[in-house]
Each structure stands twice: as structure tokens, then as C-alpha cells.
Length: 173
Image 1 (spheres, rainbow, N blue to C red):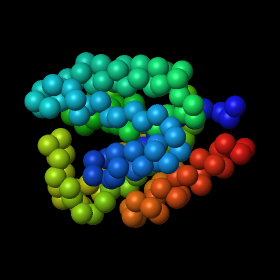
Image 2 (image 1 turned 180 degrees about the vertical axis):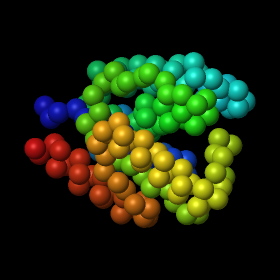
Image 3 (image 1 turned 90 degrees about the vertical axis):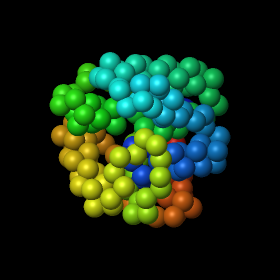
Image 4 (image 1 turned 45 degrees about the vertical axis):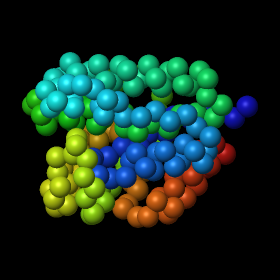
């Protein structure tokens, strides 16, 4: 049996994380864990708190743990703890103490895409604003010594190929 991997797609809004994560999960036969903030009533209403973000983290991590037990190959996550921590820092002025419960084998940092796609949860329609926020997010990841692979803005097939090649290298040692 090959090693089960946990792959995380990270990045700011409008970076193609969800589309790419779904495509990679389907291609590799991995379980897909959706970003749970999209379904949280407080987030949808815009009244989330730091406690809300911690609850979302616990839910996502429990979904990962359960999926890892049943997955044949592993799981692909559309975001993880670092997005929630950055969200808390920006919105509430402080970090939240959360860590992944299951090991993360690879983080792919998806760079923002210039063309903006409307979404009720997105707040940065201007590309240059997103680029600036992305710099802050990358600095935060670096300050926390998070290891990641950058996926530049590109078409889906190109990004998917880069990811699958990297995953194969991990699996083959």
C-alpha cells in the first residue's frame, strides 16, 4: 500500500484553490475536503468571530481525520489552518492558536489570478489589492517557517500537471 498523503491548497481569495483542488483530487483518486467557511452561517452573514474560525478549523480537521481513515490514497484540502490564522490577524488584530491534527505532506500556494470571479465571500475585487494581501500572507507563512510550493497563476491543466508531478515525486521518495 502506498503512503496516504495530505495535500493542501493554500492562498488568498480568487487564486483558483477550489477548482484546482477538486481537479487534483479527482485525478489522483483522493478524498476532497472543502473549505468549510463557505457553509458557516456566521461567515455568510459577515458576523464571524475568532471563535467561529476556531470552530471551522476543528470541523475541517475532523473531516480530514475521518477521510484519512477511509481514503485509499489520501486527501486534498481546499485551505487549512494558515488561512484561518491570517484571517484572524487581519480581521481581529490577533492570531488564533490552531494547528493541524493530521500531518500536511505538501502545501501548494496558489497565487491570485488577475481576472476576478464574483463570490459572496470575496472582498478584494482589485487585482493589485489582492497582490498586496498575497505578499502579506506569504510573509506570514515565511515567518512561521511553513514550507510550500508556489503555483503561479496559469491555466488549470498547467497547474494540475505541476501538482501531480510533485505528488508523484513525494510518493516515489
